[in-house]
Image 1 (cartoon, rainbow, N blue to C red):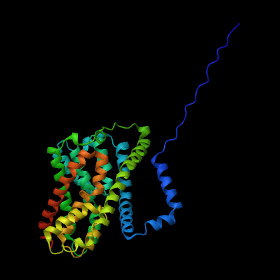
Image 2 (image 1 turned 30 degrees about the horizontal axis):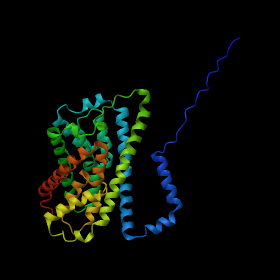
Image 3 (image 1 turned 180 degrees about the horizontal axis):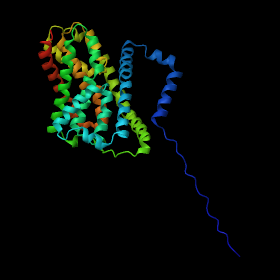
Image 4 (image 1 turned 120 degrees about the horizontal axis):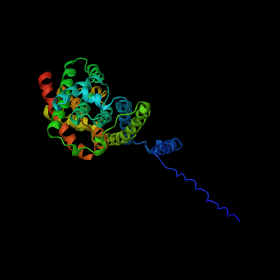
Length: 338
């Protein structure tokens, strides 16, 4: 008599529901819609209204350019092989820094857009000194920023040349400083990871995945930086800046710090600086050169992209170099900026 062996039924894998950022965002939006009237009462406080306005303004100004940056980052990862970048850029770090600085002229964008692009360049084998030069040059010397500066200062066209000179000098000096003293140990391993060349059939998939990952990662730190900028705008009294019109040295220092705190987009900061009619041109120039180089939003983005060890070293040196270049270009081009 034959015995028929019955095999045990296969267990189907149990799918576990995983909460992602999309579900969290949808839940927050649903709560905001259902509790709209209650939220209006809670936030009906002058300080909170001011803070929320600044927060939304920073995010709205920066988000389109952040999207532009991650799209360019995805395009570099998917369509630009590493060997092409190695042929375009000079092998000597000093010469590569010069080329990267001038490349910033051709790419409109703000500091939010330049961070993921710089990270992708490093991942494609570009020397960190050149990538960091591009990170600082692209948001400060591109045509959109220069045209905005000319429109904001119609009676002072020399401000355009002073801003271009100060910002380009900042980017190139930082690139050369990194080439001489920078260490790869300061950059997070994920930012240094070499990206392999993509096969032809999967380029669009790589483009979409890279852009999505960079947007999610950089967007979170953008929100964090915007929250810090909003809090500082509420906590620092406006009257503190009313006594700076006749104190040029103190005015330069305060405007440089203000640029770090306000975290404005480089396409909009010229109009903010021009609105401070009591301030001389030199402090306004310091505001325009320092802001795109380092602010709380950019520091948060750099921390998330390149690591805390990098940001804690790179940000203070960038501030000092940017402030020095702004003063030198202001004295030479603006004649002191009175």
